[in-house]
Image (tube, rainbow, N blue to C red; front, side):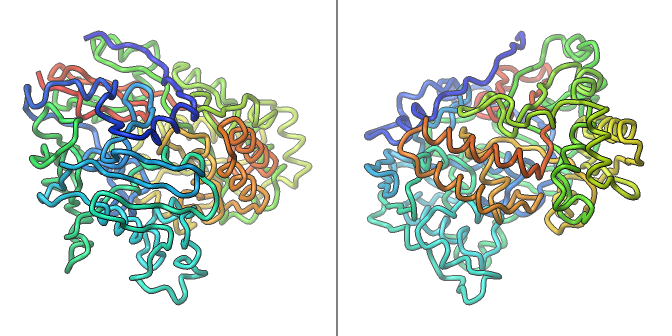
Length: 547
C-alpha cells in the first residue's frame, strides 16, 4: 500500500453542530471508512508503540495522550469523530436535540453494552459525568463539565463542604434511554464536545465496592476493545465480544508496547518486531530517509495539534513580564529548527490555534513568533534580562523532543547571550506529574492533540482559569469572559470572532510561545495493511488489518 499525504479536512462548526444535533437515527449512514471494514475477517495480533499513562485509565482521570489513546479504543461515547474529517457523528446517541443551546435532550440507541455484558443506559452517562464533575473525586477532566448547571456548587474553593455524593443539577435521567442536560449559559458547540473521552459512560460496577480503584487498571468500557493486560511494559487490548456499535475491529488483539526510547521503537519497526510508530525519529526525517527505509509504508499528514513552550509559573523571573517572555520567543529561530530537525515536516505556528481548525486566524502571535535577533536582544535587556541558567525541560521518551529542545535552548542562548540548558525528564508520566506540582522552572515543552474539532478546544482547556491543562497557571478575567461570550454566541461566525478575540488576549499576555503546528510521519510494518491515521493523529484501530 502506498502511503498518501492528506491534510485534515476541517469541517466548519456549522456543519458539525448540525450533524451532532440532528434528529433521528444519526449514525447509521456514516461515511467513516472504518465503518465499512469487514468485521473480524483478518484477526491476528498487532503491536503499537505506546507510552506510560500518567494516571489510572478512567475517563475523568486521564487528560494526556498515553492513556487517552487507550481509553478511546475501549470507549464508546455519544458521538464518534469521523476518521477522515473529524466531523462528529452520533454513536451511542440516537439524537441530541436542543432549541436554545442551553437545554439538551439526549436519546440513546439500544444494543450497546459494556465489556462486562451490562447494558449502557442513560444512568451510566449521568452517573459518570457527576462523578467526574465533583471536585471531591479528584478527576483531572473535571474542567470539561464547567458549563453544566450546578458545577459551581460541587466545585467550591479547595472543595470545602462538597460531599462525594453531590451531583450536577443540570443532569436528569428521564428513562433508561433518555437524559437531559442543562448548562448555566448557552453553549452552541456542546454536542461537538461530547465525543471526548471525559464524556464516556461508566458501568454500574464502577460505583460498587472497589470498582473505581479496580477499573483504573482494568477499565470497563463500551467500545470495540477491552483491556486484558496492563503492566509497566505492555497494555494489551482484545476485541470486546459485547460491543454493540458499528466500528467493529478486524484484528483480535492490540499490544501497546511501552518504549522509553523512540529510536528503539523505530528500529523494531524496521525489523518487523513492531507494527506501528506514530512519529518517525528526526534523524530519519532528514532527506526523507524513512520513506526509503519503510518502502512507502508510512503516513504523512498534518493533524489537529500544536507544540509550544510554556513559561513556568514557578519561575519568578518570568512572571509578570510579558515583554521578557516575548523576547525569549523572538530569540527562537523556528524556521531553522523546522528545517534542520523536522526536514520541513511541521509548519511554523503564527498563533495558538492551528490552521486545520475552523476559526483559525492568521498572524495572531505577531512579531513575537518571528525570529529577530536584534530586536529580541533589545527587548530582553529592556525587560531586565534573566539571571542564572534558563532551563528548557522536556520528556525524553517523546520522539524528537531531545533534538528540538536542544535546538530551542541553543537558539535562545546564542541570540540572547545567556546560559540555556535543555533538561530531560525520564518519561511523559513523570514529566506531567512535575508540571502538575509546579516543580519545573524556566521554560518547558507542551503540546496538544485536539480532543474535539473546535477552536475552543485550543483555548479553554489550556488557558482557562483552573483548567487542568493550564500548566502556565494563566488567569485572566478578560480571557475567561471572552470564552464565555464565545460559547454563548448564537452562530458559528460570531463564536469564532469572539474566540479570536480571546486568542488576541493571549497574544498580549503571552503565557506561552507557540512553536509549530503538528504533523505526524507514522510508519508501519509489513504485517499490517489498511492503516489509517485519524484527524487527531491516532491510528484507527478499527480499520487496521493484520496480513
